[in-house]
Image (cartoon, rainbow, N blue to C red; front, top):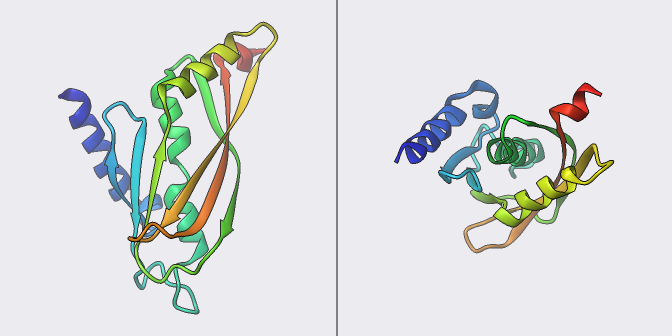
Length: 157
């Protein structure tokens, strides 16, 4: 119950935070365990570009912070997590509201922990892909984020 309330408060916080709010995106759901985040990006005067479609910067910015946040919440304070790089591939102009779903699994979290527990491994880069789709599920853009993960011990070295 407390985790569900916390995730609702985070959702509200994201939607009110000025830097995220200006992307035009809206967080519609954060799972209590932080393993899923859903985003909605309406086509509006705030997200429309010169030719009347969704601005590519809004597409990217609407999904940018979530894999890093999801890993921070799931791995805990003994890990350091940073966005390292990203790329976006535009497939079709966005002429309506777009939706994105970011998700990680218990297996992914366990794999990161296991890799960092290996002797000599100081950091790992993980790659995550999220599609921005319309109401019919047609992909309009694909964002690929690379997230850097290390431990505090490795950071101090």
